[in-house]
Image (cartoon, rainbow, N blue to C red; front, side, top):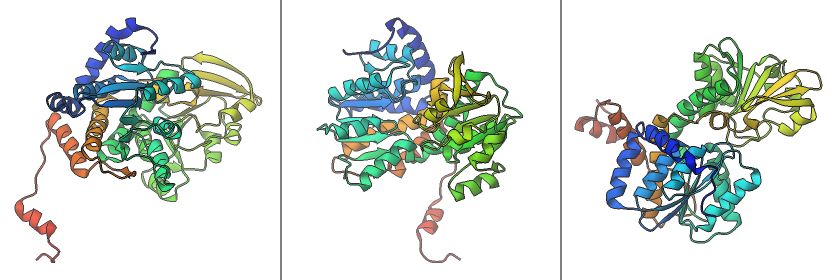
Length: 413
């Protein structure tokens, strides 16, 4: 089986949507133009485990333009856009993904990518990298990781001396996490909630579990729409920051009593548990914007449920034994990609520019040790410069005098 997609007739629609995203990704277009001339990936095989979206399609096209053979599978069972998968398959890309695939299909599709013997792997959540480690797949020169959850897993692998090839933590680039995580997740999560529920956010108590970059972005957007934002945290510094930013900070057990909408963005397991669910008021909405569907205790929810029914796309009503109703969005999976389209192309432009340059960096530096690295700062800054240029924004440059001053250890007078 070369491709696993639902309906190839969707390809024209997918191509139109990919083109629309491309029009908003000027940095990646410039990188693609260079790759077409230089062919840095000629003859190379690249395996990708990413959300199969219009933005990802433009990254895949960029890698292909650089001479690579690219194979793509989904990093989440609900995040594939079937028309995009069809469009890429029509262009000769090895696509193994469909929206709504089962857990078994998810790993079967991932293994289809692995069977094509990738030399570089691009991951979002570290499932692909973890799998090739478990299977001890030879010939992999390095990998890249897109998201915070994956970077955490990979740094644990490095600490335990089990990492078998170097990794570029794309998530840790400033032009990724400062923008993608904050502005992308903030906007797209709100989009997913609205598509799944059409609820009014203004005036509601909006509870956000986690105040990392994704939590900050979501809080900013929810506040901008008139919500009363409540933050739950385990990190005292982040909790203090949330309070200084003007938000109410509570333990989840207290927030559960008053919240209208609950969104988890922590990357950890069972952030909303049975003891929280049972205290929620009738009509509470719960969802997740963290990478894996473990942040909401779904088995615990099932134990206290009397009956369940689908009320809207990506919205299931759970009637609890206490007769209160709770609405779970997108099966607890990434609500912004399951119920909506994920991050806007304009922000993914920078994230995927990082991915493209990270793959090139790995192949140009074959002596990297088996560690987790950041993309060099000069490449991070170059992406920012290109983005500013595309926006018509000019900035100042240091004068020779200023450069000398900053490089001197002597006290200035």
